[in-house]
Length: 527
Image (cartoon, rainbow, N blue to C red):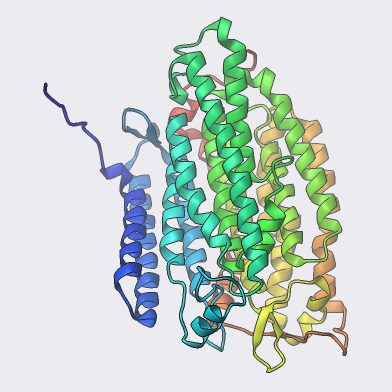
């Protein structure tokens, strides 16, 4: 018996391999390097260097690749410019996340618990904090999650899609539980995220099994080469369950129940990375699935997209209005933005392939900036040290007088979320709504415009609170802006990018002509 080794083209996978290898090396560093200070510095340098190298590799492939792209692992992975755009976006979000992970306050503390394996408030935790212990495994966890997301955005096989999903989900479950303060809230959020995430993964995997039973393949590009009309219902049900699993990661209604608790309980750097990168990876996977397989079921599945999009926009906006916590407000805002993103999927317009990455770029950069600002606003402990983040809305009153720069940046991110002209958010919503109108979904766009106008209320409310409301003299606990170099730098850079993208022509990013295999099939409606 002879064994023929598979011929794998490794070069197109270099950006993903670099990130995953860095994550694996980071785990070894965590195990064998004893000095906390040295380990933390090495982990940070390794993560930044690996992400920068991955970004350069993506740019090199973008320049060298043709419109059709290349396929790897027997067409299980497709690397066209659409996939490379998503990979580059994820690497940018990861760089922002790594920098926020490395940020420390004046007392030398970061956002993560010094010893994650002990009970909150225990004597072991007190000793670990006194000794200056630190959880530096957050860096390799982020790298492994990023590598999984990059893979998730490029796969053409449903079973491989599930593997990539688990690769980036498991590190996130752990990261959510590592908050330095309010640890019980953090651990509760992690447990909820894990349980609901496992449930959604099971639904997705069950859908993959049904698709395989109906078509005898899990390849997205080969579903209709093995299509049997008598198994139409089985295939449709399987694809619907796969879509449900992806909508959970996007955070769309009614699959959004994990979002507010995870956003509020997780350390703010983790929330920033998770909010930007997870949504981008899930939308990339849904776009690939839609233009390779779901287009055949446009008549049957369009109502699902319309219903979920409208529900997400309406419920996300209404629930965000009544929130009194900044992080929960941004969580429900992300649910509304999930609805805006799904507007682009109405009718499977080719223009959506350009609109979706641009929208996620504008939303993700603004999200990183907003949570970078949140990390700077702290409650004060009785001894005057920096405590937990001040996330109640009332604690942000008068922030404009105490630190006009951070308050101005936060206001910029808020009006970008709202889609005010001359910000990146306006251009992002414009290109998404244009893609839907081209597909004839103008009623859905009308609902989206009304939801955007209503959502402007809770964004502007916080801006008014910061600049036109004085902080109460008897506020307890006291709140102070503890500016840190890295956090402020991330917020400033994000603000500059938001302004720059706001004046970018709407057609500057055209990926519809370079979508490779995604547009190799005619997009038609009907069963």
